[in-house]
Image 1 (cartoon, one colour):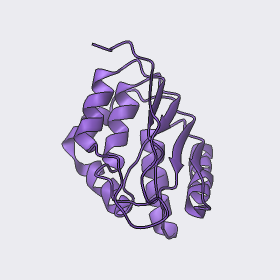
Image 2 (image 1 turned 135 degrees about the vertical axis):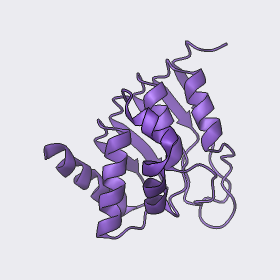
Image 3 (image 1 turned 135 degrees about the horizontal axis):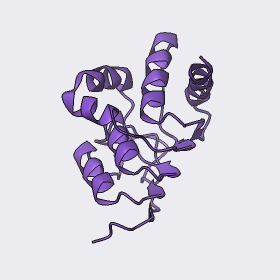
Length: 165
């Protein structure tokens, strides 16, 4: 019904962002993939303010369908769980559903709003995540974080270096 919708914004914060509590973002990876397929004209998708709870059901697996199905996307804020992000990237690289999507054009998203999503990685983990994010969003230049999550800044730098090689 809304195939020409260009902007979808759900402006909500999680309760108890400072610690404990559950993430109020109730979509899962399949829900987000269906949303992306249903709204191919999206230029802006803001699904709440990503929080630090890291308890949401979405993972990085929801990002590739967004990039492939919403080619015009220029603004994205979405919750995704980073607890096992390195393993999630390793698992999606071998999944046949993602192999098909990887052959398709991706959006030219300039930045990804990660806000308070935690990212605790060492050097090898950062390399895997940088490579995976660059694969999903080849144009991403920055991860917009707040609250002093330094690993996102390091990820910006590693993707910049990937782009230059």
